[in-house]
Length: 158
Image (cartoon, rainbow, N blue to C red; front, top):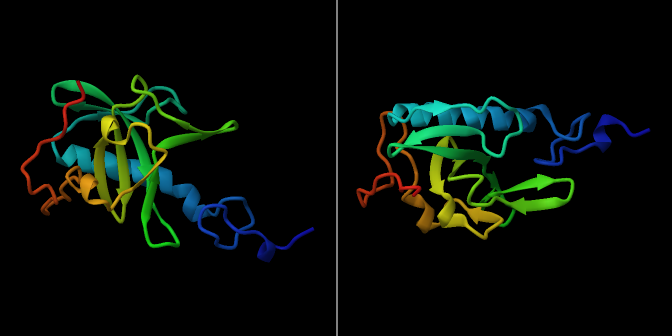
């Protein structure tokens, strides 16, 4: 039987006794809490679905409409990029979300939240969060300035 030194976290590579280390296991909940906090500070009310493992993590009242939000945590790739999976992983592999399942992806990286509309990532399995085209959807940090210099508001989901 292998020792703890033989086991690596499948997400970050740290030594662990489990498949995923405690730090990586806690990230999704921490990311969701940060997204809720950032949205509330933008004046956007959020709600959690009544069922666990729903196709979206939050419902947010954006632009006078209820929008389905899927929270994703980005990670640093060895090649230098910051990637977020904008698909879900099942026993059958990775499956892309469909338009009737999600309106926005709230991507968290380095305590920043990007509220990216589904239409901007449609057909993609992964995105480089730091790419110029996604910067316009970075939410203003509480008490700070946004990268949204164009004055764009949150995109419409209609």
